[in-house]
Image 1: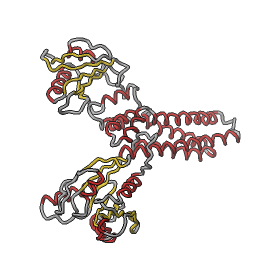
Image 2: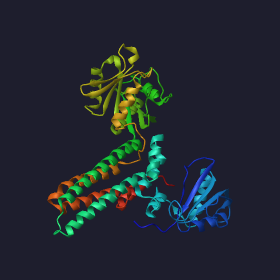
Image 3: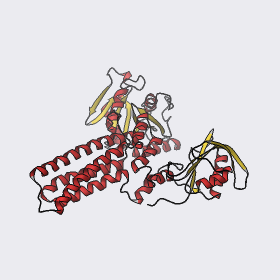
Image 4: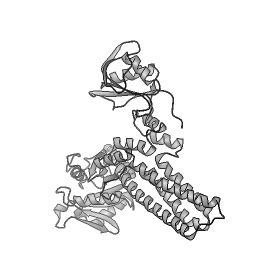
Length: 448
């Protein structure tokens, strides 16, 4: 994909009322268009107070202009930011003026796409921009910043460099077959491949933790009415997020809360009690609850501990089938003499706790971390996505095959080394199809 040659404009701050909004221009005509709006040529990297005017000279607002000439800008193109008062009328008017003067509306993620195409960022860094914006915890934000700083890319590039050296050695042997590898050289090559695999496995482990930090865990609270689902939601959230009453059917619409549980981002969804509904509104609530259950990573089946684990398991199976995502939560442990505990009920995890007192809550948090695959150690972790893990796993698989093939079929081994390098290059975008680029950047916000 070649860098575009037109100029784009978009609101770089969230729409709605605010003290300040930022409208961003990028492209070869950005400075000229801005000059038409403010009445003079903006000085590079200077925040200047000026008036913004429409194409016919009608005043729009007064604010700041900052120009970033190419190539030292976010996108690598001429970039101009117009800082105006926040509000839909002012920003829409200003954007309408920019479009009338020759800028077109930016597509989602197009500013960052241009930064990638102009070699300001590699693909892993570009994705880290979106991850930083969307981070659900401080640990996730720090991990995204590490990727944005290039630590993930540097680790991949280091493995790529060593892999290139190994390929050069193997290709030389193929080009000069009369000079067979000495035993010592063959052993050294085997050791280098083993060390490469160790580095790649370590990188995969770090990336797996980064993916957990980025994606988090979606857990849905389900079960019969009045089992304490909303109370458990409030206890985990740390405030009264859900209405709690003794009236069955209080919860109708799914209630979604974004939590950070000891560094792990968790989306917790409280749903309507699953039972035969007595009215149309409750029936719709149950229907929506089942939709949430289909999307969940984990289902916390909350029931009264006095019903017993066997009864809870039977009710869960009757409602959801033999779903492996179900964890039994035996709530209201404060009403019985048994202490909070993490149990095993016929191979299914069960947690006895009290949402009222908080006793056993730490067991539930540990269980959520274990299900998500979160080790709890965010030090040095960088943001990663599922596609990164897929690429690293394919690279490792090719390296393992290469290690086996080089001794008996060097040509096949060399091909596996090439395939491993191609898979690795997908992480940073050194080799990436245009279709994949379109999919990645379409998920960004408009102004980024």
